[in-house]
Length: 445
Image (cartoon, rainbow, N blue to C red):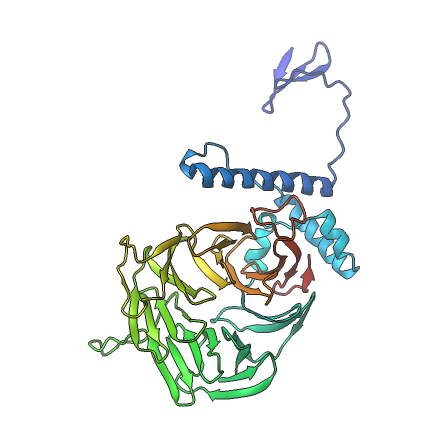
């Protein structure tokens, strides 16, 4: 008599053996295989996943995503995350981080559940000197905590600090604390100026960008973008609606920047195109969105080009305009023009910086990518989740990246891959990940 089970097994009671429909092999007195070692499983799946993703992305970029017929790679390591995290904490406690990192190269996907419950945004990263940066956890709408990261050691700073900025040139820092902004020459250097806030008192600072002389501040908030000086607090964006008596300057996706020489200001938000202003806040040009909403802006290191990003959901378009004729410039929204170059047609940019030759941009999907002024992507590197901030050393060899995972990634650029789990075609070496999860100890990976 034969009985077929739901699992596809056939039991033959007459001959007392068991066979499987799938392979029809005898399994009489067959021993059960021992469980696979967690390190072996982690590395086998992780390296295969990275290889498959890299091959898929390379194909999509070369031949078009519409021609990709393969399956989307899966990182099936969720079931290992709890144990790997336990081992990570143990390695930090026992000063065995290097060995752990060798055995368990870090990953993003398996830890999504941790990011959702414990992650926090890492923003306002600024390079100080050598291996030292400053950064904040939390957004403009939350209670923030500032940290000094020196090498591998993160030290909490005064809990009253709400925002930190750094000038484009001259190494001027600005700190917002207790409704007062102080600018200094260098980190914790001599005080240049102190601004007691009145009109902007209590507003959450999306960004505070000091002018190169430390005598003015470009303050970006969701309730207005301001120039702060000893003469007062002047709102330069958005433009008030004089016909609406109940108008208030409330914005989403507020963003602003200064040119490196501080000659120009660019400001935008979800409801208005990017406006180009002179250093006093007078509008001299406008750049229309090529996607739905203005989201980010940045000048090249030499100020010869301005890029603006507009977004739609998690995607976006970035264009670049020459600053040679920036005064009076008018780029129409959703129209092709010889007056701009398309830098990228995919990224919703959240953070960026300009190096001598490139823009390094971080997006909503967790990629950082480097582009030249012609829009050629020189490299891409995947970290995972929305990128919140970037800082680079003065010699442009070390990059720190913060994201909403609650992590800071320290990368040695062009130094070779550390392992075969790296996703991206950038030749970068991740020195460590600093994990700052809510209600958890600070860890290194």
